[in-house]
Amino acid sequence: MITQEKYRSKVKKLLADGSVKMVIGYGPGSTADRRRPLFVRSFEDADQLVLDSNCIGNLSGYLVTEGLLSDEKHVAIFLRPEGIRSLNILAAESQLNLDQIIIFGFDSVGREVNSLPGEHAEEFVEFIGSIKENPPEKSRDPLLYRIEQMNSQERFAFWKEEFSRCIKCYACRQSCPMCYCRRCIVDSNQPQWVNTSSHTLGNFEWNIVRAFHLAGRCVGCGNCDRACPVNIPLRLINARMAEEVLESFDHFAGISNTQEPVLASFKKEDSETFIL
Ligand code: SF4
Ligand code: SF4
Image (cartoon, rainbow, N blue to C red; front, side):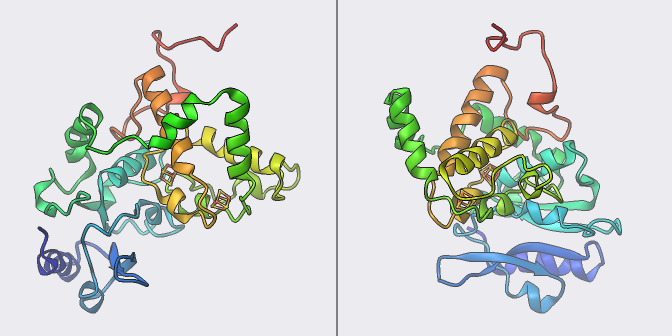
């Protein structure tokens, strides 16, 4: 198991020798089993760091905060495998320079930081590749099987019911590391591409547009699902879309920082079933 002191002292060392200007990690949350992001700039901050199996949020989205990396200084960050995959996508999409990032990799069962391959994204590629071949023992959500048994009318009714609770708070978008646009299409009203009111049509538009925007980019970190205040099972849409992308295009999002975006690249073997 990871000892808190061990990685706190690693963080302090990086701060003390000026290797990084900040470390993004986890601190105590509002309840004993919740964690919140902690932005560590001093030894006092470092003493607040926590790392355990409750550290489940993907912190990588904070790296694209406007101006954070523009001074070319380094930042260190605690990331689980999904977070490292999203970091690779952000780099592949030219949103950040990986040379500025030091990674403290850890896994969900609290393996030691040092037991993962390294501190730089490229050193994790082999590790992430093995996740694709041997996904962790995480059973597929039983609800996905149930939805697949439904006919199209039942499936439509299921999602209509789920989306009817959407209040268009956009917490799913705000928490997603892949939703980094400074101005989202839904915030534009001239022209208004996506209806902003919380009614059936607008809610379908929003959630479906978002699912397609994340096709081949979602790493399954679950930030969106946990952020949704009305518990819409967004994980089901993202997980099913990721399966579809893997089956159709052999594309596992975030496997490297040079991976081409699945919907903006073409291979001769790609399925063309959509061409009638
Ligand atoms: S869509 Fe949800 S699960 Fe996928 S990367 Fe974004 S926050 Fe994570
Ligand atoms: S977080 Fe939930 S309620 Fe808020 S916009 Fe997203 S789906 Fe709708």
